[in-house]
Amino acid sequence: MGGATKRFSHPLEPQLVRVNKNLYISRGDPQYFDKVIRYADKTSPEAHYRMGERARKQGDLSRALFHYQEVMKTYPSPYYSDANRALHELAEREESDLAGVRKELEAATGRKFNKFLRTFLYALIVINLILLVVLLSGEGGKQTASAAENGPPPSYESHAVQPQQGNSFSPEAASLRPEGFSGVEADERPYLVRVVPDTDNARAEALIRREMEHLIGRNPQKSRVIYGIRQRGGTADFSADTAAGQAFPAGGPAELENAFVLAQYVPALRKPVEITYLGEGAPRAEVLTRIGTQLIRTALRTYAADHGGKFPGSLDELVRDYPGNYLSFVPREAVSGSIRVSPSYDGGGGWVYRPAAGDAGSALTPNLPGASLAGVLPPASAAAQANVPFEPVQVKVIKREHRLILTAGGAVLEARAGIGRPESPTPDGTFAVRERVIAPAGGTPGVYGAAALGLGAIAVHGTADAASVGAARSLGCIRLGDADMLALFALVPKGSAVRVAEAASAADGRSAAGVATVGRLDLAAAAAALKPPGAPGVRESAPEGSVFHWLG
Image (cartoon, rainbow, N blue to C red; front, side, top):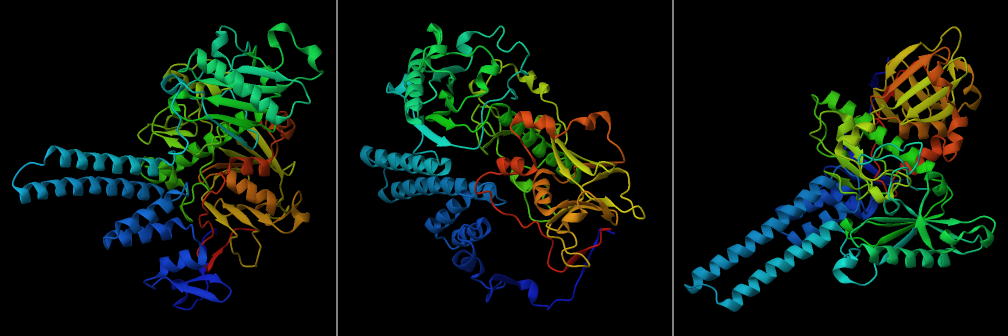
């Protein structure tokens, strides 16, 4: 049940990769990866990595460098870490070669380099290392020294994103307390700039830039956050302390919920001030950050269980081709919008990943700058990480209500579900997601829909039969519409628990009505918001010829 059988296929068929209707590439072709780049996927991380390795073996280091750099443009990917390592090795080799040249010249001349030549070679080494570091970091054109070092006002990056306002969730900050900013010094809080309703974005951004430069001038080493809010009712509602266009410390988290723009300055990152236009209120980013955190943690726990208790060396290892697809992608951290992964907290956005940690909750935490946490307390000690408990992703199916509930990081997302017929009921119990498969083949074409989460004898799967969703028509499996199934698939890591019960418990009483207060999240919206732009695709379908035998 749940296994797979093979249909007959031609012996040469596994060696062929279909590029388009009439073009196939043989995996045995020495130019296979070159042709993949030329005809199929110009950005393929695997193809560029293999071409880089070949060029490196042939001694063509400039071409190898080009291909490794192309791999680094796609993150996450299974080859990102290997390409990064190869680039560092090339840098070390270049430094070693230059040192060898120096020794050979000394031996040839029979004396030490003269002062000029020695200085020239040292300068050449330094220049090459600097150029390589700039290439690796990808930040060469964006770095900006702090005001304390260079004096001029900071540069700015302005962009519009999905709703990503601050939150009360960080490994370096305590949980948001009901009293808001009680006990927090005014200068440690986020700042507000209020503008009249008809102020356009360009004018509002200019006002925020002016106020940010003023705050940075007071203390260039302090992180700052300014939120822009369009005041309802016009200028009559402004007090002397909160005049239009002037920054003032926020009085509490509630004041930040209607912000439409956010400016962040983190001097430790040596980056420009970032200005982000927001779509909805602050709670949405908090929910997305919690969901993303628990997705990665759940996948890490399953990976460790499958690999002798060891976490992967890189989060990229969670995103592999089937059956190693613990995740479909490494979710972005919603507040900063970053997918950057750091070994320790530096406030740079993205994630902090510590593979040597003892548990999944400690291994993965958000890397949020303290100043960007809208309405949170100042950074606390490392012990504050314990305030962010690990809550594994869980799916609950309430048969009586034909309802599927996904819980992740305190969020509750729902979908209508179809269940088994009275003569072949969906069994009660708790199951683990053993397989994550896109477009699984069954005995009948399309029987399992767009995707499936295999639980053993049964599965949660899609269906093109819309009438069976919300009804009792299956042979024991749980059915969702294909659109909901694809969204659920992206949000359920391998190893997640699926609990099937006849009736709801008290904990299941929370419904999508409660989610409406945090940005109208649903399965599709959450999946789309967490997926990084340009996330590399992995093969999440089973090998050709595989047939699954869930109950249906």
